[in-house]
Structures are given as structure tokens and as C-alpha cells.
Image: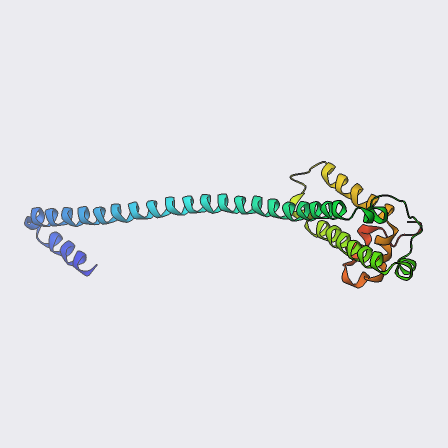
Length: 197
């Protein structure tokens, strides 16, 4: 800056030095402009790189959200398929859970009459409860409002779970035995503790 002031003072004091100072000034302006052009080019390139990074980050975030939806849905469906395969391997358990063949069955009575059937029924009831609890926890991930705006898929799942609790008194009995294992939201979702259920 001081150099510029000295050059300006010399130029004003000696008008004959004008051509020399002018050419020097032009060089200074041109060199500053060249620097500014490079600087501007680098800044624009950096800005474009930031915009591209933001777009790529947005795309990756969207892909990860889709992956989360898929993996949470896969976890629930895998559990449901495992449940079905258990009934294929042990069809005798179906009378406790799939049909209302034994509506008045009590876990205590079953424990006294057939200990093996009791343990199988308890294990199956725990599996069912864990499956329904998994659904209850994961449903907001794989059936968000944006994917199921009318709630039709959710209602289908809810009807399936509600009917399962209605058809199998053992499920509600087991949930009552181990209710500390589950959240209040899940217990309310099960409707086992409502009057007349």
C-alpha cells in the first residue's frame, strides 16, 4: 500500500514521469486482476464442489433411509416367516395359537397336565410376543406415513396382530406373566389388558 502511495505522489509531482508510472500501474492492475481471476476461479470451483458434495450427500442419505426401511421390513418379515416355519415343524402348536380350538386353556392347567406342551407353548408365546413387539417398534421405519399415507398396510398388520391375540388366550396370559419385559406402548397395542378382551 505504501508503495502505491509513493508512486501516486511521484506521478502527481512529476507529470513527465507519467508514461513510466502509467505502464507500471498497468502492470500492477493486470497482475492484480490475474490474481483476482485465479482467486475467483478457485472460489467458484470450490463452490461448485460444495454444491456437488451436498447433492451427493443428499443422495446417499436418501439411499440409507431406503436401506433402513428395507432392513426393518426384512427383520419383521423374517420373524413372521420363522413363525410360520415353526408351525410347519410342530403343527400341534397351531391349536394354541392359530385357531380358537382351546379358548379356555390356561397356562397353569397346561403346566400341570403336559409339561412338554407347556414349555413349547411358552416358547411359542414368547416368540409371538417378541415378533409383535418387534413390529410395534419397527413399524414407523418401514411403514412411515410417506410410504403408507392411507394407513392400509398398517391396518392389515394391526388386524393380523389383534386377531392373533383374540385367537390365543395364551398370548395374553403370557404377556400378563412377563409384562415387565415390554413397553407400556406395546401392552396397550396388544389390548390384552382391556376389559372384555
